[in-house]
Amino acid sequence: MSRIAGWFGWGLVVLLAVGVIITSLHYLPFDPEGAPEELRPNYVRNPILFYIHVIVAPIALLSGIWQFLPITRVSFYHRWAGRLYVICVAIAATAGLASRQRTEPTSPILQRISVNIESQLNLLRPHL
Image (tube, rainbow, N blue to C red; front, top):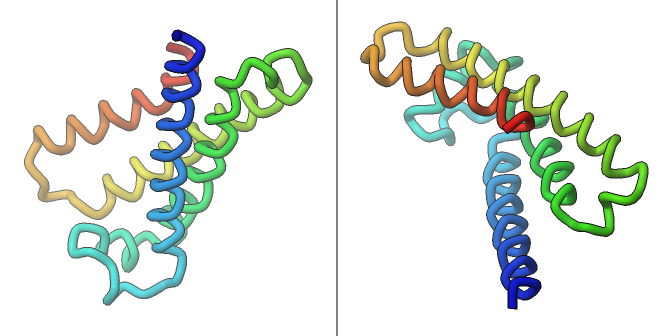
């Protein structure tokens, strides 16, 4: 039964990761008018940081979901995909945090603290 639960859990993670990837790729065409209101400042003021985050984060998701399959743990792929994952998470989290810091200087202090904590947890996630 635990084997079925493991595959079900992995399938759920894959499904959620693919959903996030598809959503993030939606932002690739540079169209500030089509962006949601809360993301529009990131489009306009920090397009480079925003695009680094939108392009690199899906790579992290793709390389990360395969790490949970037992078959990949015995090959050289697991080590290289893990390195790629850590690098992509660090880059995507830093770019997301930097673009967020620059676009919302007047946001409430608790919101800024939660964004900082979330970004730091993304950096630490591979080590937890």
